Length: 443
Image (cartoon, rainbow, N blue to C red; front, top):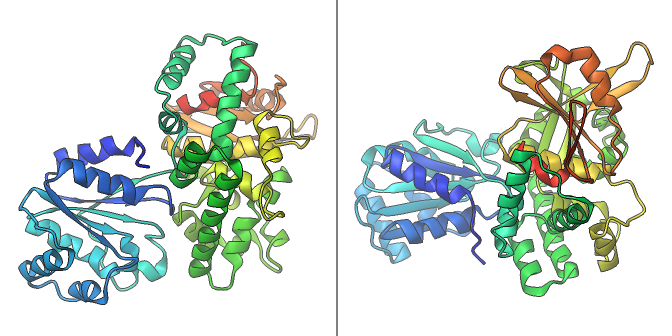
């Protein structure tokens, strides 16, 4: 299935504004639909296109980029190999999974300057050392990030174009839904959390309505990610750090404890590895802020971080990887919110995913209250205007927000809005905005 994706509008904007003066690099995790949407764009918006998939291109195609002194010869050979005619200023050439041919990426500078055709690259693991070694990264390359299907795209795939508009109106007016409707909306959102935003998993759900088969698709993707991490780090450390994400979050610790996963390693010794895992886009990294204020990037503590999975559907499957498959009864209990385990970290992961897809860097904050000697944690911090917005997440309907209260007492002058994200209806407790988790898409 080819699903409607929001990034399509950004591709249109690039085509109109750039007019061939830059190449577009669509970067994101594996299997999120980059190639599909770019090819759909090529079919709809150009008279012809050539898609070069560097995961399966012939040796002849690879060698063409060893010498690009004669671009006319390069274009002639590509047209013959792919049996496509290229039309000046009306054709697109796609370098799919360009990380497998660094010299093609380097050639973008000269191809754009030639100006005969438009170019879009897709890729993951774009910036890790082996993929940029000995090449000059073209300044003509305009990167944009793509993520798994968000909640609105998921609803579009299910044929629902109204729900998100309805939620937006309620959020803008801050109008409660009522308990019964909120329960329905939460169940709908939990379905998204279970299926996730990987297009193959979504299409399998739509075609079969069988969560066992959906789970199989997600496990295939997770195996692919683990294989990618072995390419990043043949010692296997990255793969182990990835697989331990659910257990680390379950501990509700103030940071990811590398030493509990990798013997004789500390957070400070794996910073480069964490950076490369983040570059894979399969992992989201939230860093502790040393001083929660505007300009959060300046306060980033590199040695104190939490890891999340780019897609909460994948994360859900990782929770039950001790079995060969996740039983349908587990999915049903998760969907009905009747599983007898604390799944606060599941909600924490989906909020991380939403905030990142909305263009936010991820930061959190922990602190010791000097009066009570109690440790508090703000799950996420958002920079808005010249202030910050702290977010506390609960997997239940409890309206207590001790961390927000303690944080407010400590940093009241820095706060714009305070948010409690939970599972109950939209509400407000004094100056704390209480949001059902599905409304975090508007933060």
